[in-house]
Image (cartoon, rainbow, N blue to C red):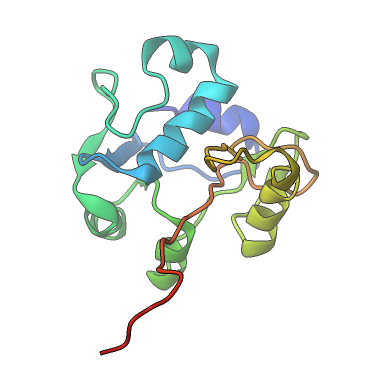
Length: 161
């Protein structure tokens, strides 16, 4: 699956002479929402057929579902010729190979903390009070296009027992 399109964007790449299996999350997740939000922004066809969702109805024949980042990671690590998505910190912690993704500026960018920070840079001024903002496909020469905020809720005053 996808070899001709991948080869067209990466003519020097040495791809296996076999299908590539896509691995996606089978459970609802913010990671899936971010991934499908990005796809919806760069592909009108994806947006109209699937859309951005934490539990999308994957197109028939598109890969295999695995539960959580752990399931996706395990399948990618143990199955030849697979591709999938997990959170950046999860990919780094598990030494997964990562893909450069073409950003809005037309540059292929590695997923790094600096590239995610650049994706977030322009959103600070436009973040609404309810904090609902998307930074996928953000502008910036080295912005990683599949980026998102992670929110942590903490008490203003933490009681320590």
